[in-house]
Length: 169
Length: 246
Image (cartoon, rainbow over all chains, first blue to last red; front, side, top):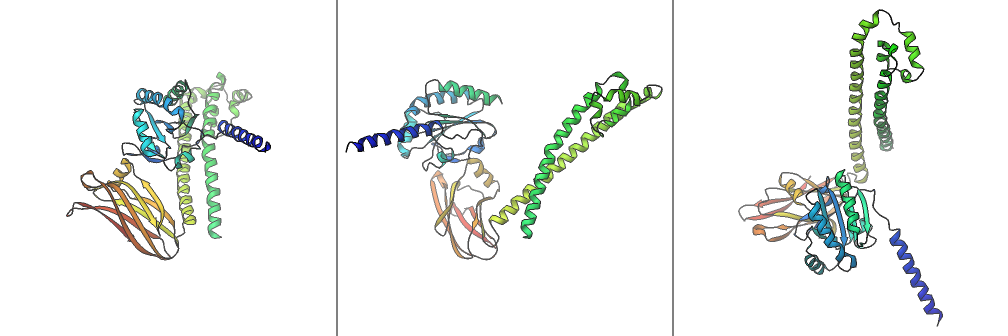
């Protein structure tokens, strides 16, 4: 009987261990053409990624239940306000299944950029989502140039460096 | 068998052309490099001969061994003065002429590559969607006063084959007379049913969803169906039709 809990603990450790490895070695789309998608935004408009070709696009995948989302959204709001006029497009994609609650969450965060819903998680699959939030930077020619998993304090400065670099190109 | 050999020869042709396109700019760059090298050779080499020979021959004039050969080959006596006056323009025009022909060649090669690409696309389509099973569905829109298109869902034999969301730009393009191929697939010969659902904003900005159905016979030839959205002015309503192009 004592063997079972020990085995369970071992299994859990292995599972968590492998999960962390997966997150660390999560495949990214960097260097590849960004998979195209069309999604309905909160305001009712349909947006297609390929229609922003020629502009730098920041795609942020988020979910209401992902802790870092709450910290990242204000930073993205600021980036959108500052660099929107310089040719940056910020798109938020929620993968929440509960559309209504995700909508309420976006409203409460006063998100200034278009928010879309990938309820079928098809786009998330195309982008090989590893951890949430996930932020992707697409250059003017439609190629994924940077991919950030999660969000921690100071990451917005990193985003800004990358955005400035892509805008200069 | 015949088609396969044609395909292989087309692919071989495409790869050859791609190589040619890649090497052509390199050759051009080589020439551009060779020209300044020839100009930087010592003064005795101011004869017209190497200038005119540079593009046509090997890059020998640019090698260190070349200057003595040039100085020995060209007598530095009487004609060079007249030759110098006449030769540089002729050499320059020769160079620019060569560049022009090279440019033309590159342009024609690019055109050939585009044509080949088109042929490959058609061939691929023929292979993936042979005429005896091919079904193509198109969307067109006329006027659009009473309907703003948002999405179209296509079901064939009760199976959803396409769900397409239209952006404002795409809807505009349809209103300007564009025709979109929304679905291309294969179907067996026989009777089939196609159902299309149109979603959007109807009259007075109200949400609008309508369906249209067509039963069609798939023969041995390709089948073309058109989902047509038009306005019914008398009723102030949009109209959704499916047209079977024989």
